[in-house]
Image (tube, one colour):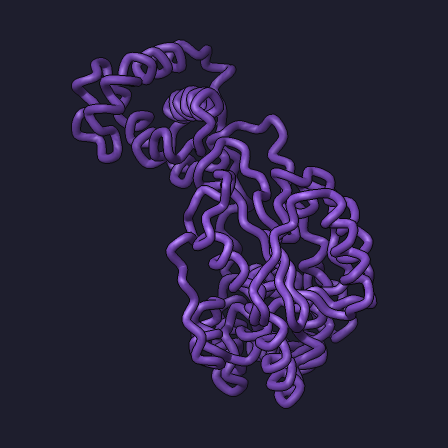
Length: 379
């Protein structure tokens, strides 16, 4: 690998894309600024072939459309590591999609590897040590330092070589088509549109609050969101959600009442204490009929479904141990829950359960039906 080249002009990007159109596989990664700004954005796109790496600066070259046909071509393999975030971000910011992908993190998981972070894999497989100092850096800052650029380049420089190794192991294990199916689904992931729903839906612990306290929490979260927008900072860096949840629970009447709440430092209370109290006071005046309610799920499953789910989890543990494959990869809990609820009696009925993979049906479909059949016979 012969270092990297910065792409900071549209003409450079067009030339690069013409050059890359002749290769059938690329490594791809990106850096964003989600830890530093209110609205995150892609700040750097790294691409490598077998011999070179390029760092494309979208803050200098805003139109990345020349990349679109290159990455969307189903005949070209795009290799990423933990690519779900990258796939979503590329589509959100530039409308760019990936046609065919191999995810080295997913591949490592299906190889049964205990550590599947990129740094751990490169260390274990190639004795390459990655410098992760800039993992949480603000990638929107310019100019890029040579150290940051070098860090970014190394994230794709070895990906194709790693993909070779993992694909060979997966082929030997008979699992290469499993990963191909998983990756064919990953390329369709998109950033979800949160719409105009309440902010408390994304606050852990909100479900335990009563409606009046939930109204207070929503007011506090709206206040924080407005402050974050003004400051151009992520909301969690303005005030922690856990602290706002405590305020909603305790309903303080004075700033001093919040002194003992973890996360609300004297500096934060000095700056925002009065605004927090005002938000609490206004929310407490919300008319009863306008109070929010946290949406509840279906509640506890009936005893038959719970027993069936326990049986399926025990079965999964046995298969997981036999295959040396993590239980969550073999069959995630949400899928077992659907199977327990629908109680399929045939392989065709199992096939119709939303979310089930073809490789799962081939691997354990008949065994699953047999397990459920035995369960019905013993009831």
